[in-house]
Amino acid sequence: MKKKAVKKGLCLLLLCLLLPLSLCSCSGKNSPVLTVDATGISGGLFAYYLDCVCANPKAYGVKEISRENLLNATETLCKEYVAVKRFMQDKGMKTEHYLKSEANSKTDGLWSLFGKYYKSIGVNKSDVLSAELSSAGKRQIVAHFFGRGGKNEVSQDDLKQSFVELYVGFKAIEAPLTKVNTKGETIPISEDEKEKLEEQFEQMAKKLRNGTDIDTLNSEYCRSVNLVATQALEVNLMKKGDEMYDDDFFEKVSAIYHGSAGVIESGNSIYLIERCTIATNDEDAFGQYESEVLEYVKMPWVEKKIGSLAEKYTVKENRKAIDKIFRAVAENRE
Image (tube, rainbow, N blue to C red):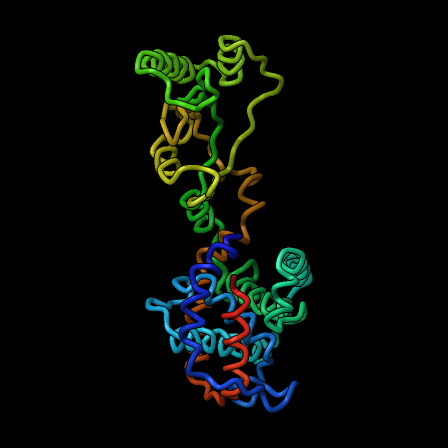
């Protein structure tokens, strides 16, 4: 959640873009801001989508920030909102309970964090929920067409292949490449200390490849640094792009063969890694992430389909209402 930092970066620019606009209020409190092919878009929903675009313009295809580009991207989101609803209606689809529940949970989380801000720009909790249910609708389309029993069901083998491309599983023994000096400052360890640590980890890797259990090695390592290993190491499941790790970590772990071991350095740490097989016949790890992997594989198809439908819609704008919403978002993003 980097909303506050991004708000400051765009606030002045948005206010400058608003100087020529009229200060008139919209003609009717409940009048649609946009009418997308006879479907009205409320001011609250429009404001929510506009705020999303302003928070992360690049994510919504805005390469150069201008009032026109921000509003065009917002209009596209509104058109796609209508496209999702109509596509699901045409196909007789309804959003499953678990997806509705997730949408409600995400809405509750967003509202608890940003509810006061949302109110200041004219967004109600129901507007946030409407947007989240639309996102859930896209997920429902994926499940309907490509999930188990779907018309174009994706095979388990294909999903498992995508799973191992998207995730890595591993057990790790970690040691810092930093220390705290007498002033309480965190500084890099010396070259001699680093060489000794690297040699120690390479020796552990050799033992691991020769059959020594990684938990035994972890216990030995902990004793060497006056610690006690109280439990067995768990399998870590990491998704590509996970912000908890440095950017190069995923690639370095992926370079280790399944079932093998290696020593890597990433960030301010050195690791002994045991690469684990995560998509096996027991399907333990894969089963938990099957829906996510399916969406990773097929959501681009859904996005393209919905985008194609949305492009065909005609839009009627309430310019006074849009100007007022744009001003509210600009003035409150601080």
